[in-house]
Image (cartoon, rainbow, N blue to C red; front, side):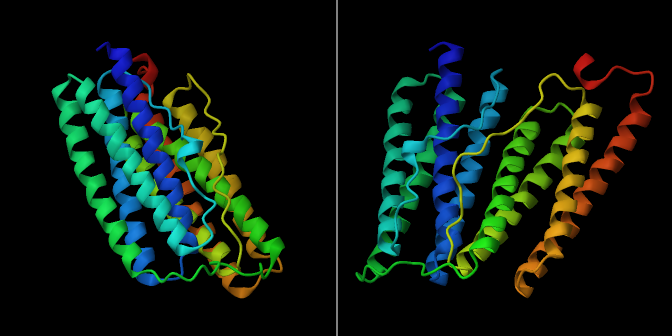
Length: 294
């Protein structure tokens, strides 16, 4: 198998894991049953690890990570808990089938071991979802009723999509940066933005709305030096902080204001952390080549 073919397989797997994560997070935002929600969230975190492992393998063999998703593999239409879990079982079966077929084609031992590990995880997930399905009652009751405040739900969805976009942007920087400290910062900030997504999505669900996890466009400027990348992210975090500050001062209900204020404080920390890092690399790189010139 050619290297380009192996990279294509791994990128397909990244996209498949991304798709499962989107489906499971959407459900986590809406499911009211505490036990079921915790189980789906745990499985979503394990799929995030799978995505990371496949993406890191792409980088190891000289490829470039793309964080695409497979739209036809994502089911956001289920309107009952039973239908959601049935969709999750189908997602796990698709992953098992896909990775098992790849196992017969791939010759690289390290990739084969990774596929074997992930297949085992997906089989366990399928068992867990089947167990949950046995506990769900048959009533076909919708998970949500009327939206309490459509305007606020729309604002929160706009912020949710911004966080989703920046998660993908920061993850790509994490996979490809050569600077270890910057990679750590990007991963930390991506994880915090995922938490913001969770808080926003759950609040949308509490309002009776549905989180908008449709595909987002990620703007990444190629061929920037490390200081330029950091500066671009500083500008973004500054604008994000100001947006949350503005929204937290508007006429939203108190619990929404509290959430927006909390996220605004965390965005302020992101901003200051990036500024501190920029100051350090400016001191360290005076008279030395930039990351791209090494």
